[in-house]
Image (cartoon, rainbow, N blue to C red):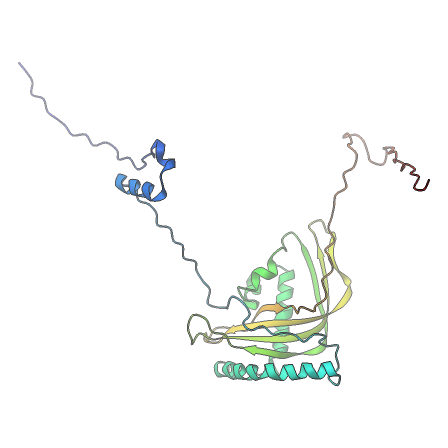
Length: 286
């Protein structure tokens, strides 16, 4: 007698990964994507957009052009009078921008701001030498931060602000706009002539640049920026303007390892009698 046969459906495990075919290397990306969609594989979408930061601008708009020979020419000389005439021309646009700054910041004053800007400048450099990133972000903009910390890893910085040779003053004011017309930023250039000391040591403690005992006179044009539309914004250091006539910086002292003789573990360098090679005598004139 035949027994009745019954078919029991058995559900197998779904494959989440489908291996590519052998000839997939020779196919374009669009063909591989269409094959993956046909096989049921979800292709992750690639976002090419990049996030932007609107708390500061990406650069310095209409940067201030320092007159050649600043702090060295007398205002009574011929070149000094030409510089004064150029400053009067640039001050016309600065006055218009200054009105716009005062519309958003009622307490702003060109007499009090240079001292405040110099204090921000000093605190920012002290936090840079102490590697205090949290406080440094509150004193410099997102554009200035990578320029200040780049290349400082494994180095020791010693910086000190000694005195001001001349009182700081505002020399340039601009109000750029970004994205739309109402999004206004304030950029103010402050001239600082001071005496500072700077010394940079490498990770082995060797001096690379400058000196802690040798003060130098430094003339700088520092740009400060603020997002005027935001009520929670503050003035922060945005960058520096280096004039074309500025003298070149001193070269960095590099540490170079001179290979010595190959020694065994039980030998000392002082005990080795190293024979110095004598230079050969060369007859230059016959």
